[in-house]
Image 1 (cartoon, rainbow, N blue to C red):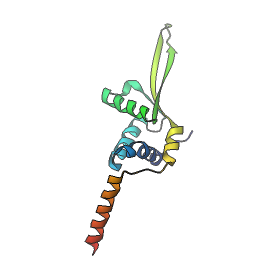
Image 2: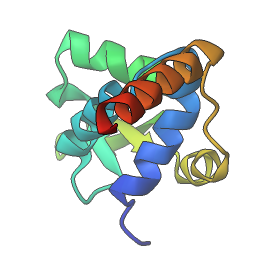
Image 3: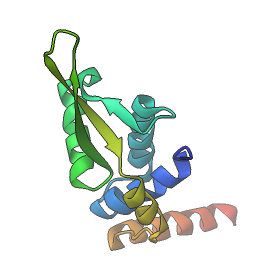
Image 4: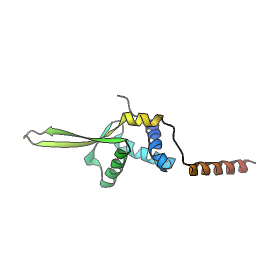
Length: 123
């Protein structure tokens, strides 16, 4: 399986969170936050997360970016050990990345204001 590209993840996050008002800079920060944990892997062990990080992962799960899975392993003494993992939902991320990003009308208004200011400065 190929590595999930940063650009693909950014597009998916813009689709899911950008439409809810998250700025491009915040989307980039969220992408970097995720990639810091995942790196080149598709999963992260749950026990490496702090409570605030886990809360962020639960929010990403609600928005279709991540999912949880558990694996039970039998130890040498017969005791069961459960390993909880967070996994990228590649199919959803790829689907979200192909949708056009919708910007709010307020954001469009601000873009127009800044474009107008840039035009005035060039004159």
